[in-house]
Image (cartoon, rainbow, N blue to C red; front, side):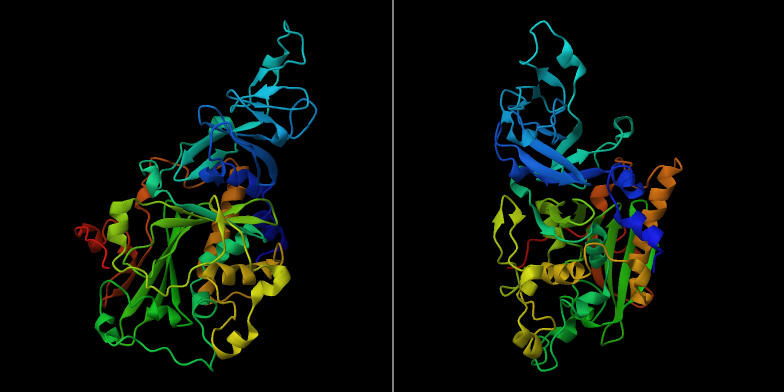
Length: 445
């Protein structure tokens, strides 16, 4: 459990808070590129780290991220005219470029130089991988943008999506670092449901190597967790015994401050994208995913296509933003008859809906001074301590981890493999992994 003081540090992200100060030292995903599809198009309201902002794409395609309130009299720049490389407030016509500089002040005398003394609060932006990122920390401490593999990715390979989650960001992040819950929340079945039938060739896969048996060992409810600290955060392995006595290792990465790479059930290495839990404010979060590997890496990562009956969301997306049908007010459309006879939860849509049902049910900010943690919570404990320590250390003048953009962010991978006796899971997904030395093969169709 956490003390109430540490729970406050962990969860509060507004300006001036310890965690808010820490997060502002990293590049933050502010919005999807698809949300500003055209130059000189309508501005977009953005709320991030408890700050109300306005995003706009100017005439040259550069994205500005400025404070919602015009620095003149506080009118919202959302109503502004986006024209000729600037956003013009409709109250008195003051116009600001993407850097926040006032470039026109028609309500003042023509000879006045007052506009040179006025700036809108603006944050640096960088567009990569279908996401507009913003840096909200001290300008003199701005780090270079870390390349997860998106900087050289052609536009046609971009894939970025998000969905609104009505709870604090840490609750969602904890779910992505929880190896034990997948045997229940996502993979569990009612005792009245017909037992799962293993494929006829299942025994052929119960041996050291790739691929795993499509996550079959994840059905074990009590994995052993081991954690390894890294330069970017940590990796952890959920270790489960196979029927033949080998060990299935499922390796997940945590990258400061809110990124996760989770293993893909249809290939040896982790999926080609990162999951993020981006704080809108203390009570709401964007659950975001973006593609970080190009087509060559995807061919290496995926050794099997997803089955035709793989469960996928049916909720609609608009410019990459998902509109949820399952919400707290309709109890996530839980089907009690399905829960009794078939699935464990009765929420039979996708994993994200199941995740949000439990994390939102904790309330906006869960009081962790009341919890009771077990051995399968080791990764969650490590994540919390790493974030709290980094926030406290920053207040003492110690730089946060994972800011050096020269480090190989593009090489971070999760992985899943059946280990041979004596084989160390720590090499999985690293440059020492034998699968990375193999030639790229086309996907099996």
